[in-house]
Image (tube, rainbow, N blue to C red; front, side, top):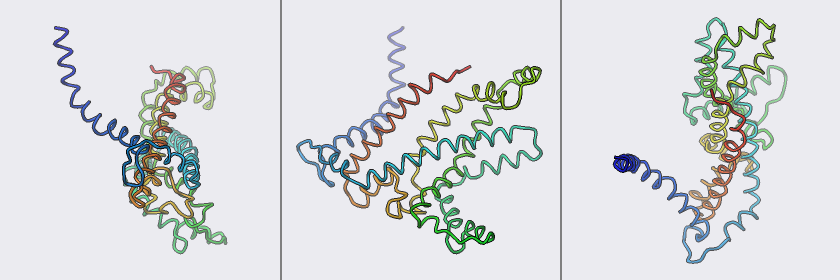
Length: 288
């Protein structure tokens, strides 16, 4: 009977395992092999570290890596803080909170390409919303996407605007599961709102925070749609991110071997972050 159950289990798992191997593990292995044996779009017969040596000597790669890390370091925590703040606001006793929830969530339902086009209009030097506001205060306009100093922060602002509403939904759902008895007990002890947040709300939301953190971090490395509309990595690679640089090398320069070595670096970064998230941070999360 036990053997029969094991056979049945393997038969049920086989389709998923085939798909997982075909579309995940096989491409990873192929990418790693191409990064060692490939040159340009060709494959050689001997392994070589040439692509990785070239990567270390590539100034654009280090610029792109720095941009990607800054992009993640800013967009992830700011999106989480904004999402939690918005969720607590719309979860309180507030008139018209349904409309407010919808307005916060609306950016999420828009495709990234549409969001990029909307913000391209906002950032336009001549007719853009932001420069018109600056003019009202007697300030000169800024070339938001054409200036290397403001281009990357401009992309970060757009990403935070789109992501925060999505993460707010998870925090709102988690807040509505918290027992009011905890807060009533704290109020009888004259606990301040800040104390209740620090001792009750935030600790009980840690599982949600870990989930949101993982998703926000993955999105910071995999979302590049807006670069195609807003900057295409410019000016002078000031907004170029790692995934977009891989795309450029693979499909614009047709250097798939170098793109494969870049992909291996990206995979290594994501694996390292996953180990930190689930090896260190998850130990501080308590599930109830």
